Length: 122
Image (cartoon, rainbow, N blue to C red; front, top):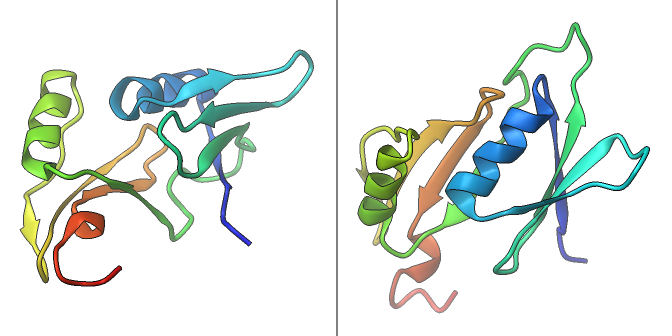
């Protein structure tokens, strides 16, 4: 079975929705009386469901990282910086590059060219 949705418990659902729409191209959808804002992936991949965090829940306490496939990591990070999202240093791995940042809820996010590396057969 494919993984189709991830839930993020957000202190500020609206701010978090705007972040993923602005920087990663998701489209927000919510139904009347539904407590979930679903961010629809426009180019395939898993959707993100935003749920209001409990008052006592600490931001970023889950051990998870959302990884977005980006062919040109350096160019993507530069565009994001122009729009207010700063990624950390570019890291060279085994045939690919990645960089890390945090979302408004302090969840770890990463952009990676791993999916585009050549000669892996993946």
